[in-house]
Length: 402
Image (cartoon, rainbow, N blue to C red):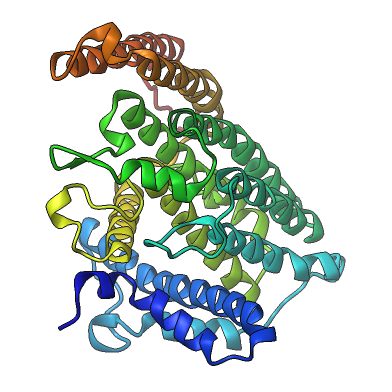
């Protein structure tokens, strides 16, 4: 019978077994190749499954059929989409910069896959364990703006350029609260290593894990992180860069065939990446929420949480209408940014409200929780009311041509 530890480390053991059969001078290279191949294969397969789940889920929410023709219950639809993308004509505008136009989707997909190097998908399952893993993730992710600009500029189309400018403005605006919401976790953990951040949350008190999300600053930081991540990945209701009603298809309007599919792939792969970082920072990474479930393999916990996050993205897309550009920018700078700074303040108060100050548990823990929650909740009410007063809804008047 396979023990729980063996099931947890089955992929690590398989990797060591394969590398052990490679000549010693090439073992490091073989380990790198295996890690890269596993990341590409696993998350590309997850992308294919997610496209089916999303279309099925949106169809259910909107009272219509999803894919149901290709294969049993439409499960072969990703394969049909891949064949269609590979066989469609690749049309490039005559006046476009052909080299940059060709490189843009490749750069976008490449930098997104690079961010997976520091995500621990299970115990001892990480491609590169960097002491500055969180910093590396955001540094690599910042290169996506370059790829988007390359696509918009090289197409020599005013709609694509306008879409690229929209996308870059949105990504920069929401990248700031995305990073600041992570600072609170880094302050509490005292490290930038994604592995050590997960290990800090994998401790248990009375059988309950020390996940950051169960603290006031962690819960608020997680919500702000996910809102900013939704905007970073251009998901609804923040899909302004590809607003069909205004700019047709945004920065990839002049792309077709497989290059268009690469932009589609990059959007989903980036969504998986930021979801994985949110799991690492706030949801305990590969750890279980309670100690008596710790026997379940760590990689199952990670991917179970990832599937739940994907379902959340799909749910939001099926229920939330698209924002206007002014609403999107105001929300980022007038609400998200101040709230992330307040979360950092709350995390500092949480760190220094020791049992010597608030008293022993459980009463001291309750006092600390309430104080930090009040520090977040009071400014939230004030900011929300200020934004509401600044954008009061007026009665709409309809006029018709006579």
